[in-house]
Length: 369
Figure 1 (tube, rainbow, N blue to C red):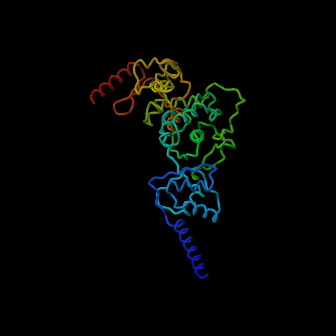
Figure 2 (cartoon, one colour; figure 1 turned 60 degrees about the horizontal axis):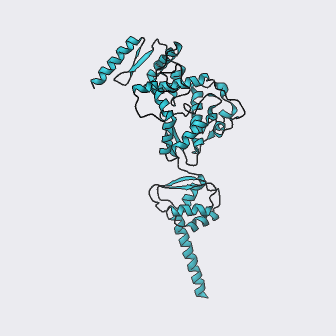
Figure 3 (cartoon, rainbow, N blue to C red; figure 1 turned 90 degrees about the vertical axis):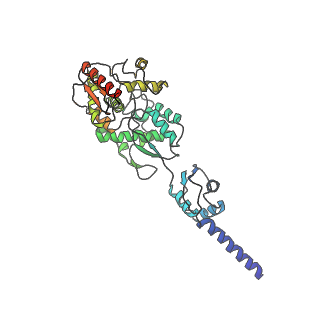
């Protein structure tokens, strides 16, 4: 009988030792180990995925500890395991929802095509999926840009953090939300637009980035029964102009002057002759080869500002705050032309003769390099 008792005690101690070893001793995972836990996964499935990834020692110990310390639920999401941790710490992470966020950098002037590639490069899904949303979900901005042919122009340049649990719809929604925030800040959206829905703050999934306009992201403003309005608003025209200005110069101090040139040409009903508009037209058609040629100036598209007077039907990129402000507050000038100089800036001209001289000077400077 004594042997049975000692055997039982030995087995209990062995089990306790194994349990402690499986729970408390950290295990170094393989380098940069990512584990995706989808909504609806059971504790057993979560334990299986973690064990398969080499993050925990024992599925059984994970399940038993979860049964013993059944507090908050384990959160779905993508997790990065890049340093040693024990099972207890891992369960704490899963209860907190300490998911991994992918960084997507959207520089000023990026088109929706560029953003789609950046989203794909960040590991958030195919570029084609983002483009589909950007081209079709115009209801996200229909209250402020009823004639918008896509979300181009309203996907605000910023550095974003997204998780793989977010859809392409969510990603585009965050970007259009950021546009609204900046538009309010600079007065492009009047204060009356700040409804109870848009001013209600919410936190992003990271828990430290306050957002507004949750309703615009989730689609609460969409009303498919309303007739489509196809007349461009002042805001839309400003965003279109800002997108052209953004593409023409990276020098912030020059943007109001560039805007003044285009507004002066519009007032005189002179074609804008903006090369970036042709590039965008060819991007939409899928024919852009990476460089413009003389024949491209006749490319058949309403976005071609050489062959179509006035503004194009929509933005040709996503302008930043500086370009938006330049389009809102252009410089007062009598310039109608500008051309790059050899130093990364531009020379402005009042007449075609002066402009031709500037072009010749630019070509001489480039030949001398």
